[in-house]
Length: 281
Image (cartoon, rainbow, N blue to C red):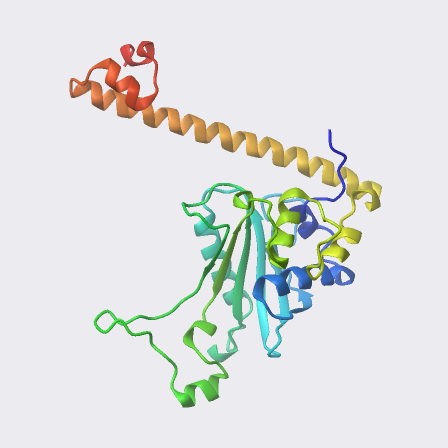
C-alpha cells in the first residue's frame, strides 16, 4: 500500500487551511485558477461552516482581494452529493445574503465566485474544468446587454457579468494526469495527493509543507483518519444507491417491454437482465 504523503485537500479545508498562517496555499490555488494574483484576507465564518465535525459541510468562505484591488467573496466547497448543482446555487445565494447587512445599499453586494471541487460524475461533458457566468442576451437581436459608459464609471465594472456570481466546477476524476499548465499541476495534486519536483504552480510548495501527513499533530491525525474512513463509507453508500437505482430502472424498462409483447431475448439484450429475472416480472 502506498504511504500517504499529504492529507486530502477537502479535509485541509476543514482544519488546516482556515489558519491565517496557511492562507498562502489557498491564495496560490485561487491565483492559478482565476489567472490573477489573489490575496486571502480572512475566512468568513457562517452558520454553514462553523462546525468542524459536520463532515457534510465542506465549505470555506473567503474574503479576498484581486489584482484590481477589488474585494471578492470566494466560496470553496467540496462534496460528493448528487444534488450538487442545487447546492452550489444555494451556496452563492447564501453568501450574498449573509454578507449584506440590513439597511445596506445593494451596491454593497460583493462579487461571489463559487469554486467547486468535484470527485464524482456530475453532468455530462468532456472537459474537467467548467466556468459559468451570467449574461443577458436579446431574444430577438441575440445581442449581449452591456453597461453604459456612465454605469461602468459608477459601478467600477466593465460588464454585467462582473456583478453576478461566477461558478467554477473542477471535475477532479476527469483529469487525465497530464499537467499541461500550472492549474493542471494543482488539479494533479488534488487528484493524486502528490507534488512532482518539477511543479512550479503558486502555493504548491507551501501546500507540500502544510499538508504533509507526517507533520500532523496526533489529534489531527486521528481526526483525519476518521474522516477518510467516513468518506469511504459514504462513497460506498452512494455507489450502492446508484447501482440499486440503475437496477430498478432496468426492471421497470423490462416490465414495460414485456407488456408490449417484446420477446425475452430482446429484453435481455436491451437491459442486460438475465432471462430468469425477466421471467419473474
